[in-house]
Length: 488
Image 1 (tube, rainbow, N blue to C red):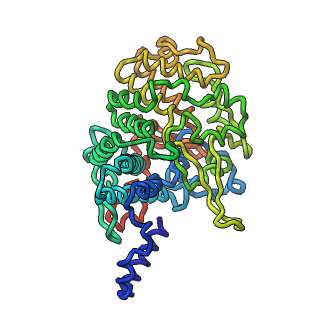
Image 2 (tube, one colour):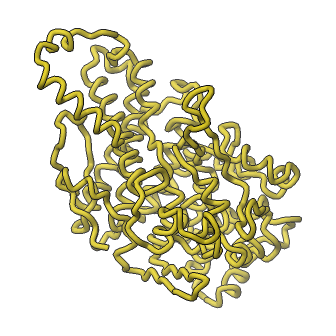
Image 3 (cartoon, one colour):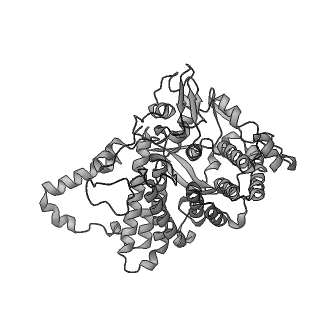
């Protein structure tokens, strides 16, 4: 993004210094640059998804992470992004896998969506662009949704109307430095909902060569389940979940952890995990990221103690999780989910860029969103049935004896409140399921779960339920556009 901004400066300066270029610039040198067909708009929309990875800094801020004691050259915190996330500090790095890099990637994606929508609004036959309009609206909603939930206070009906949000951008940028206001969390959520509901009816899977790299119908409805779950509109979560997973057929679409995955071995799971051919994946994104390297070698990662806590015995049900763990570097334990793809800058170059495919929406998440919605609408039997379907694919040597019941849930959590017991169970399972995927952070925000990080030297860093450091810092460069930073 910095290169894009820099290039813009040069272009503007050039137009001022060399006015004789006006006639040349007024003529289109290549009509391929004109967004005058649905196909060309579709090509632009391929860039309407954040090309950055939020997982490294959200995951490292969670209770899934501890101090390995060494890494990145024998214990030195050379990976400042990894260390800053662990200590809940404003991140010093602006490179891949940082909040600042993700912020600009989201607004870059929003800009692409806005350019597409602007081109569609000027088209002679707008009906021919229906699918592209749907994708642009939903993609714009998604990027803003991620921004508001990372850089603003988490949605609370009691305070959302006064909590500062993030700029919701709906027009192509025409000024070099335009001034924006943050609005409120409530106003941002309103705009997200408006775009999401306007775009959903136009989503057409047939318009994509590989639907899982775009907001297909299942992925868009999965997004709706997450949006309404965060907004606590549980009836709508149930409504959209039925459209995200056809016929509510979760069993045949969940990842086969305790069958196929166990049989193919650690080295073969990771390349398969984020492929479009995997039924569980609803939307995948290619992100500029080195999360694989951080996850296996950085100092602040999943320790053996954390692994034993969340990836061994299954809460309530008993039995053993079928999630295998391996260690690439001593004491750095990982579930094989991440593969890095390295693209050289040229054929003969030794340098290049790392990429990681990230599952943005999955069948597993829809299942948990639906189970949570059932729980809050007092449909306990339906929630338990879903969780038992999930466990049938996750427990080693699973049998019906492992199934959850109300009595098991209440006894395990020592409560007579079945709703609370179910929520505790869902959160525990989500934590294990989405390890290395960053979603635990949003559960911590939703339920104001405290996070305690301890270094091997004994330093304790606590993130309390209302700690202002739960908001990642807005990049300092955004101040040029009038955007206030967060008080951390």
